[in-house]
Image (cartoon, rainbow, N blue to C red; front, top):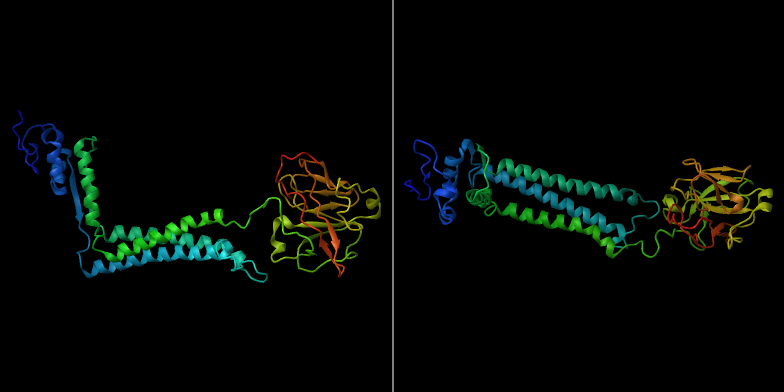
Length: 370
């Protein structure tokens, strides 16, 4: 028979000399526990679980100058995080995903080079300010309590106490009466949500539609130019020489998949030239043009031995015979270098007749060896 007092807030007999009698779940009904306030549960839990309160700091007094200053600091920090997230959206939208008229890659500008760093800057700043705001909020506005408590056993009393702690923590946070904080948090949350879902817009409006792996900026009538933008005429190169060319489009010399080798064959190479089937007319006179991207791993093919008619990849030693349609004759590459069909325009400069008729680089590596 339980002779100990069981009204809410009592210690269930744990305040009397002698051994403890059961626990809160034994001395109280679930209804009694649910009816207790957080303070009563604290007292009861401390008696049963041996909680020792070492220090209590209630935080700044409501309405005091110290509290108002802390609220302003935290609120403006959260607002700064939200503004940074919005700036991320502005940069992202300006890239042309949502606002195609904003041309980042116009010739002579540096916007395209700054695009990715700006995205990283504003996203990093947003998360940093959000973290700083949370730290300031915790240190300057939340009450602090230092206590030592025994391990809980997961009883019903523990569950009720945990729920009451969460509710009490929300009440003690002062969010309900600190309007600046709630508004800045709401603004920051909305901006963060937009920032995180914005990249999904690329799935809706993707500029790389169609066949992005199989297409480059080469097209009919596009001139072959050097890295400095100067066009090339037949006769500008010596027989047996190679020159790297790019499409004459904005940013063409920065497009890795468009780099092309323009090779002027020697007379003996022209007579022994055996182009691939269907590509006999891809060259112009003693000139041929092949992709500079190795079909093995995408490395830049940059060496040419005119004596052996071989194009070499310095990364993994693949070799391609220029007199056999750039067919691989040594090394790990299994696919010929794609050939760019070329001709000259009315002014006598080299131009492309079309884009490459196959994918450049190591894409489609499972294709049949040709």
